[in-house]
Image 1 (spheres, helix red, strand yellow):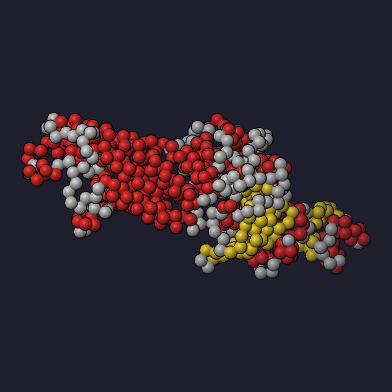
Image 2 (tube, rainbow over the protein chains, first blue to last red; image 1 turned 120 degrees about the vertical axis):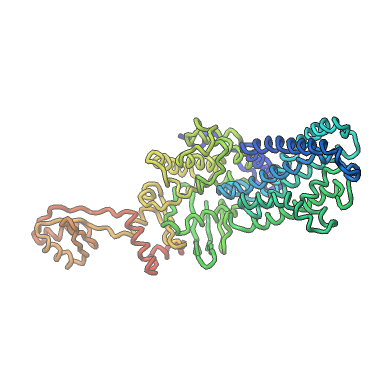
Length: 273
Length: 309
């Protein structure tokens, strides 16, 4: 039995002190981790099914109530955001996936293997956030496209449909996916700060859904800046007052993600693993 | 090569590791011996940069761990075999580790071969027995073909075959010129595997010596003797400065004189010996002798030699 059956590549001096090398390694390692967990793909499928399904249910209900709606409700009716309502579900599920990418490692103790393989802890957190966000984006994008198509076909029965070519529609689909992606980054931050799956997942749900409920207590001007309302704003085409533009909503979510990741970095980098 | 300088770790008021200075040299198996809670795992976590020392420092191959350009090509470590997200397959677990250090994916199948897990490479780690997890952890440690390997209690929970396998693996890694550092609280195992010992108790390094030196320096050799005139022999030996104790089975255990001196004394007094056997002291005895001194706050003589290093 020989241990050196294959001569390992010698460590080239100075090569890996190079930041680019470290970034590539962290991204490669974290992507391999994410894609080899069966729960990653399960979550993606569940997120697709439930977000598309939720959108369809809301569309059916709105279409059936159209005749009994007030003229005011007719004026503010938004066929796009209605069909994309399931983006909330995608955000909660993919946010929870992001949370688990950190907390599962703390729970099992594998975080020590991670930090032994990649001692640059800040980079590991940033890399995890980038990978999970990059994974969440296409899932949310596909979900949004499909939900939009299904929704508009149902609305077509009442001649309420819009098309992809309508102003703001493509924007809503893409900004909605970007918002989910940023919420996944927030999830990595929450996971790093809280470190326990149950606690951090609950926090994630509160951030998205709870914010919408709690928002009713806030003045209208502030309400729009909550993560959950920002997510809704990203998929809204017919904007009423107090709702952010999709671009601003993305910036707001980006700031939340930066804050969550900065807090996680402080907590993870300066503590014993 | 692992070098610690006054390495200290406190948790609140508890001192887990107390000013540990030592060097773990390449080319031999160094055992890190100490009772549970002595500070072995904490020391190992500080070596890997996982725990931040309260004071002092530790370098691996001349650098603090976090500054190693290719950490897994320098150091391979197994701390806790069960500390793994276990819904991945064994091969996939090794692949992310390889990817994170730009190690050729071919190494994955090679190390799986070395540890004998090739047949279960695609099985989820959750289905693994403890012994298999231990082997997977060792595969992960070896994947970067590192100069230094470090294992925390590697034989805990293994069957005799597994123990023999690990023992041979450690020795072969050391014979290839690598630094091999393994911790254990099992002294019989250390006596068989380690060439050199670093003994820790209550967070302090109390001995740093070759296994042979440690055993001989800390457990007084004794002679077991039985004679027809047992009482007379005891008197004679005591007069010559030996310490004599009776045993339950009717023998005398003599310390302070070797077997030849005991035989000579018996012969000079016409005493008939029925049994005369030098007792080889064990690492276990040496360890307890040393730690008993430590508990009484009489630092053993080896502590002095450690500081002199």
